[in-house]
Length: 393
Picture 1: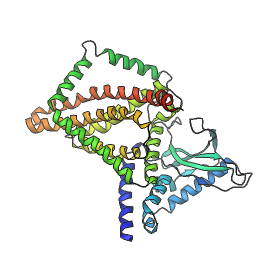
Picture 2: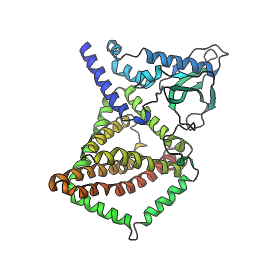
Picture 3: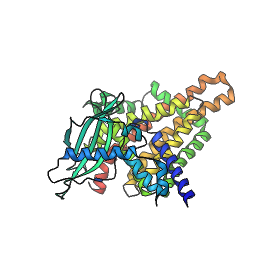
Picture 4: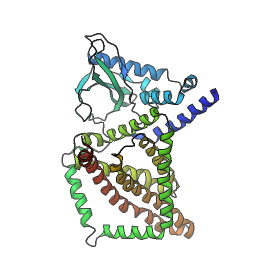
């Protein structure tokens, strides 16, 4: 029995390492998803409850040892619950220097967060600065007037901005700039220009390597399905943790803020920009230049991880999101397949065909851009306007 538990813990650790390893934007963040009940005298303040919750958070990180879970009744669930609290970097949580003398309080005003107070304290670990935040919900219990829910370390830049997007996306005009960009993109389909020529040449490359594109599509979508089936087999605590990770990723990018504000234009702009710059270009096109294979590995892992949270959100509203998944994943598939085209061209024609091979890969980017812009508009409109209309607020 102990051997089975040990194997289950090790398998869960391996999965968690994969999930967290591909979320580099959040490598220095930790979140508490399970409520932490803090008993306090009636006169206690939100700040003192927050301090207690942070102390418990750091104590859990200090004593964290995966081998200890072997003796538990449900090691996988317990492991996922604690990973959700401290993340995969307990040394980071334990080593945080927190300035409790400079607290800040503010009310959350987003959908579903009414009444929640956020207490934050400046913190740093090494050269990394930011703040530790605690989300507090008021209770009806006079002996414990506050319940600490979420604790996390949020990395901030020199302008106290936690978003990892360029500052231009803070502009109130960015949504309208994206509208103009989308209209220019649409107009390019109706008259001869360099962009339409790129799309034509990209389509020709797709037709030339259609079998490769089909195999790549089956492979990438297959790994998404595999992640979905894996999520169905995992304890609910592990699914909840993966959903929390995705939510934190979207929050760090800034998408959650615009969704909560009901800003269709800004949400579409941020979504398309992030998906193209990070998803299609940085983590697919660049690896694809190394003979294509790394792009396949990155996106198979990406889709596997993306599939896991969807195991916990089977509901009618998910139907609205299916077009987004199909369109945006296809954009990554085409750029990945471009890496395959590069490799196949070099194998068939030798390194003298390197310019042609790279050109085929490059031509997948305009096609991916069009798909991601379409996907971003649909995603933004469906989440902010269509979903409340069909399913209520």
